[in-house]
Length: 350
Ligand code: PEP
Ligand code: MN
Image (cartoon, rainbow, N blue to C red; front, side):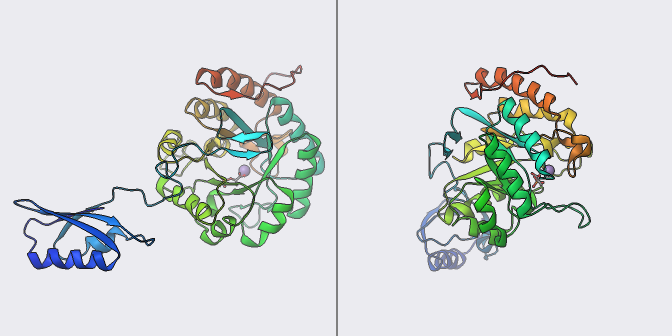
């Protein structure tokens, strides 16, 4: 970092700032101009120094960071993109990977119908929650292990990988038995105990952006997992809370190129939670692919009008089919591919 001293900082103030920085394990390079002294500070140890503790020292005018506070998640640490591989599914490569399914596992029949629909349209990963982080304690909380079984069965029946949410450290072992990818929800992005534990898991982790998290905070959450030794981290932009009320959240499309610039980790977009309404999901999904998203996470339900959670934002299967067909036009335009295995079928138009 760079420490700029005040114009009238005394020699003894400069000396004590330098002494404090050295005490904190930093190398300090001093340059004194005619009006100000500037200190170039380079860390030597593992411990990171908060700029705030230097800013309050006597005689200091300003402190600027020149490196990111995260390390393993940064592009400078790893210039090549990370590709998270699950058998023949590669997240972060040329192909845009679509993960789709219901918000929650409700019944065996519902999981089966959703898995059949998303597979037919070209999704590679089935999504669905068995442990649901609901705003109200009176809303459906998920079926737990029974839900995981339904999701796994439906995924296997259609050759899909499975992603499901983990809300607590105590659920990791159980969810690992059924899922291929752990999902950390927006509300848990700052559950550092959970993130730390997932750093020891041997399965990929998708980390959703918290509803009021900055991109830096989100990357620091990913850093917790990477620091534990798990390199398979996927980021997911799902909309943030702003003053706007027309949509459930404000989908931050710019987060996609920003993260690609700052980090080597794949970025997936969740337009369902971003919009909160199914009639706006296709527009956001198309925009996310055009902006370079490595994948999409979309809620699809065979009967969304009767879904037990997030029905309003869950797509009808035929709507999802149409979206996938559109994405097959957009992806190649930006040098990406998308699953071409979809089986066409006569469908209603909605
Ligand atoms: C979900 O994916 O169903 C979910 C609860 O998402 P989020 O954590 O983004 O709200
Ligand atoms: Mn949901």
